[in-house]
Image 1 (tube, helix red, strand yellow):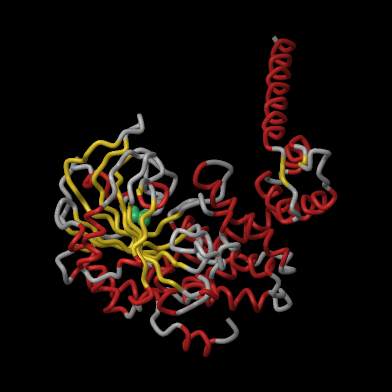
Image 2: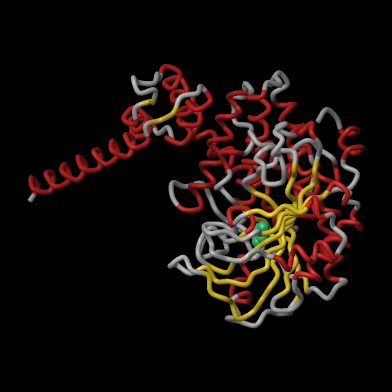
Length: 453
Ligand code: GLY
């Protein structure tokens, strides 16, 4: 983003406005708007990963919901895609999910009609829209979701833009046992310029041509620990629309990182690193940095501080990764805290007044953590420059382990740096080195105890 004028021309509908219109649409259709749950407010995962997670007791029929129709905006954090952030312009670690739910109330027909009506109200070009549906498979042993296909046809969605996929794509679960069900995902075809050029390129392809922005899940099963699917007492609808993704659709940006949500931080970053360059690696660095700072901000606002374990370790990992990406842009002094204010200012309505007040403190945490890590980073990067693969083409796990044990340089970060040079790590060797080290420590402790006794 070069200047404010360009931002405002491009960002015709702001992200907070999209969120406001989504929630108002569903409130006007008898949905009760509930507040998002704090990001760290979950027992089963470190952070909330989907808007439906706080609703689990209601979806399971274990407790009555406050209303059968609900809507919310939920902050989420998913680290499973974190390595792809930046390489792929459509992936994020922290994001905002808009959702509407029917807890045992409406079904597929209404969910699809609501979606189509809202999309035309907010100006999504439905002629470029594709949908995927669950085609059944032998992995889950669940039947194809013919009813959803029927509903898309009835609603007038063209047959040739309905794609049937298997459970990897269209059986939504929390990646762990729990309520789940077949889903139907909506995509925008952004054209060949964004595609991989393969004749097989369709929704579900890993390239960036088809942008998935909304998922309607028909929660009907409990995925049991033994792998079976048992029917839930209620049939519910759980939807998740990525605010950043719908913003990219409506603002017609090439990636999520040019949307209004990141524009201020990108601009500040350009000011801090004016000679940052525009190579793919430098472009990726900017994306990783703004994603990591926003995610660390979200975590900090949930009351977490950087630590070596639990939620704090995720925050620390994000900060350290971003600090290292800063070096690619020539930034060797703490800078991450500088990006917090622009992230908040450009999306004020998405932060509560308390959070807006707290944001400078979180910025201070980022700076403190970055400063503490600076020397380790400098030394570690210098040592890594000299690391070469061994005869098997891999870097020895022992070397990586020692870099961590003796210099405090995290192994995952070292692996990321090496991967950029096309070098992979001998992970089994790393684990073996760790095991050896622990065994030696145990013996030494025992020996020391024997001596003192
Ligand atoms: N629970 C729906 C989604 O995360 O896509």
